[in-house]
Image 1 (cartoon, helix red, strand yellow):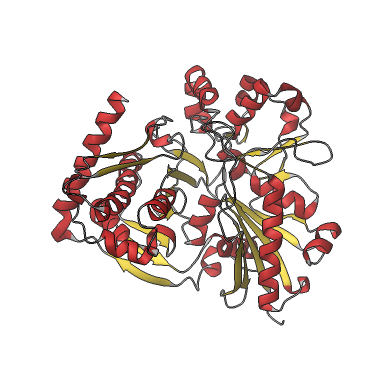
Image 2 (cartoon, one colour):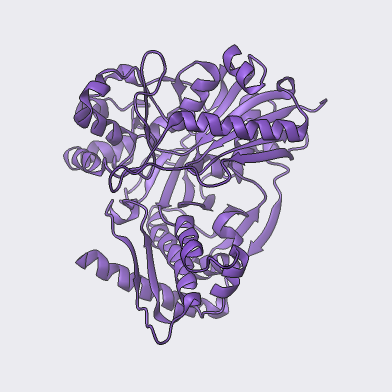
Length: 498
């Protein structure tokens, strides 16, 4: 091929997606994901969630073979590689770079007590230096390993995030980014270095932390061994890496203060950019280094995450509307009125919820009347519950100074549902703009920025296509607000009594 191609990997907990983007046109040439059914998550105990790191490599290999065959390209056609990945995971490897145990992934909540203990003991340092409670993020997960698997802990050579692991498999080199360290609660924003007080508190050796490379830059190169296995060219640079939510914001060209991105896949996220590193801390959301953050020019991503969004919708599909497709399911839900005639669903059945101060409230259905309600009420109440949980967290983001008047999102997952989109716009009052993009395409364009093919993000995303604009329905605003108020009242009751 004459055109330069950019390769993007997106390592999710459900699958690994791979895309090839034509660097000159900005268009996706081919994309594929593997496996076609959701990848398994091992839950040995309640609240646990693990995956084998090698499975991400194998899934990526399968998806890459599909896109290269479909596009009729070879490794010689690929100019640079970018990686997006599920955040907050923990991969521990030995000196031979072999995983010592399964990865503890983002929705695993076993480490919550370890994070809460540090928060209670070092609240001022957490607020002012890391801008986060450690919660159940990577640092707390590693503390759990140290206490519960001490012999394994002593064998650790380096710890990695899922994207660091894929980069290591591609290159044989172990490194990470500031954005990645911040999502693990390992970064000290005040002193612009690894948070030594976190390491000291948990007894984590500094040597466990990989070398730091820029988010946009040649970070490492495809090794001869990986090239032979994957059909790539040895020496191809890996020039971009970011967690899935900062990367989703990048994919939607969200880089500057006041801009907001949202996703609603297995979990749901609203992600807004702040331009200051000092602010009134609001518990329930997280603050990480955005992809374009620097010490001199702060760009912080304030992240609201609801664990049970698409996974709740999929559960409804499997168990309530198993006889129809998702489009029919959405049509069915629209038959119920706003507020689902009193049925409220709390979508918190996928682990400890940050927005609920790391409590595991579980999913619950309230107000169900066997003589009045049918499955359309359940399906609508599920989608409304997801929207309402978004809005509950967005109230906290607004208190931090983020103006959520416009939300950028990809036309995928829950945003394919007209009911979901209309309800989110109706309750929040925000305009929703839908774009044709995804995480693997964003990772590919990030690679183009890191390789210097694009001079900046505006050039990289000049071809980003806006597909649809959803304005709030002001005529029904009171109905949406009344339904949201009823849902919040039920949530408050549960928080006080469960």
